[in-house]
Length: 304
Image 1 (spheres, rainbow, N blue to C red):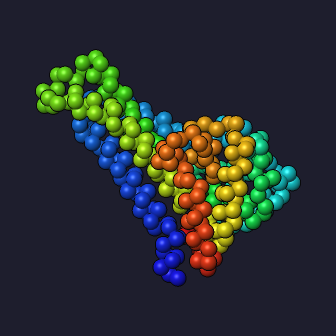
Image 2 (image 1 turned 60 degrees about the vertical axis):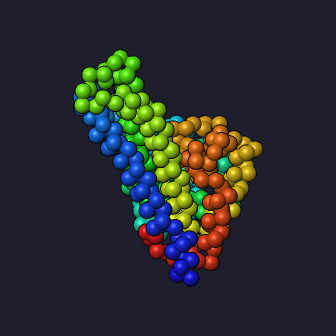
Image 3 (image 1 turned 45 degrees about the vertical axis):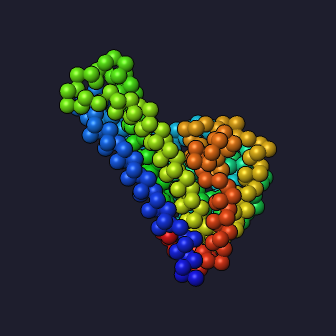
């Protein structure tokens, strides 16, 4: 039983995988800084890129909610939603997040915010017609897990590093076009290295960023299942949302915020799973069903 818990709990494995992917991103950035760090203009672009992403993180909740036209709802308007979130938040030990509803018939949900003290949960109107209370509890537990695990911070740091790497590529691209790298006597092969960076590095950075996003989805699935002690509830909800979203695609879907949602609103637009922000639903469901009978005993332990 203990071995099964360690295997299917997945938190240590997911955390290690995320740390490894983040380390790879940082290493990629370090290579670029070591090879081309002599340019003051490049350093300026790095600072600007980081500043933009810090600002995006600080205002991430308002930006995401506004982008999806989410409106705050009162306890009187959504008593069941409030009751479930309040119970789960108390179990996690975090303040009650603000509750919002998105005007869309496509069933989905997301959570955002800088941390447990500045969190918001948003669900679409279509979610209520697809899931029952048990499944809704699993959905909300998954979303609160993202907040408790500070996945918004992780995603923002990953996006910031990937953005800086892409910025280096753009700067080097212009340097190559304008001949600005030709006088680097200490690096005779710098144009070739720069060309490789321009082509390869942004692609690798994007793939690492997407892999981190998928890893955090697995982590939130596991945390949410442990929080409720009912992995089957979340598994059933994922299957229902996947089937329903095919019939009613999300009309406000965009690549900038797709990673926030429980089910990928851009589903079907990525040709390969490693080009997606979310793992395949069938894999997520299989992992959750494998947890059945093992996570119930640890449902009150937090953090997992």
